[in-house]
Image 1 (cartoon, rainbow, N blue to C red):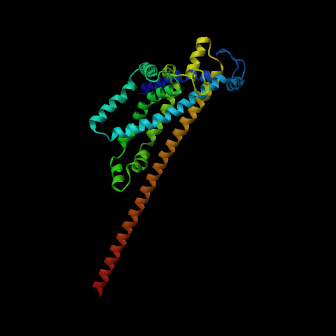
Image 2 (image 1 turned 90 degrees about the horizontal axis):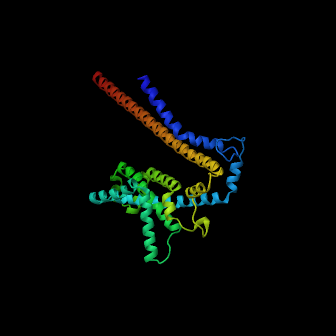
Image 3 (image 1 turned 60 degrees about the vertical axis):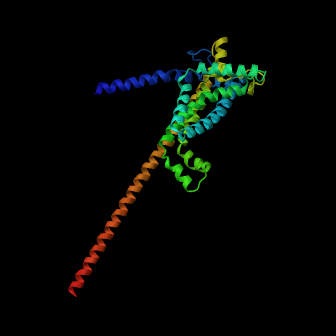
Length: 313
């Protein structure tokens, strides 16, 4: 039994070490001005200073954040509405939509990228008679990538929700829109938030769809849109990765870590609050029961005394 625990814990720690050791190495060498990873030239913040002075990297960061936020908002709205509509649809319709939604998740990303590229080329050649590749084609690609994942995050929350709440709101006179915004949406809000964060992560991390569907626009002006993924790929073609990207990696890791910590602290705080409320309710219920039994016992004693007094009279 002890050997099994030791093996299990050692395996978990080895996996965590394998996952996070490269990140910690990058973080450590982001605080030295060495051009090559593995050579320590002393502690300094030169790479962070050079990072914010590099206009090419800053433009790529700006483009990445703009695309990620806008595509996440659009995908969250579409995925949430699709999940709600599918949940309240007929059984056959719900099965078809769920099957179609799972195909992009299981399918290879290159298939989606090629399909979107062929569609945009066809529409640009035979319908609009001009090239369609721009910010809008890139946005459509990122939204198509993220919508199924939002749907899969919202669907379990809808299944956990009591379906009679929506019907009760309609019976009490609420309009379907008001019942949706006041009853359904608050119940599935954790799933919507998870889908939104996952959409941002998918957009930030995407390279294939970005490389196939991008065009001129955003902060690059008339030039090709550069995101962090496409910029790193272009830099690797020319030579070694710029050392300033080590500082950028550290900043992104710290921001993500802070978001995860804040979210986990909020969840733990809510759990503690719910436990505290349950204890208070149980204590108040026990106090009320004791008071009730005391009142009933005192009433019965007084009744018995009054009966005895009447007998004595």
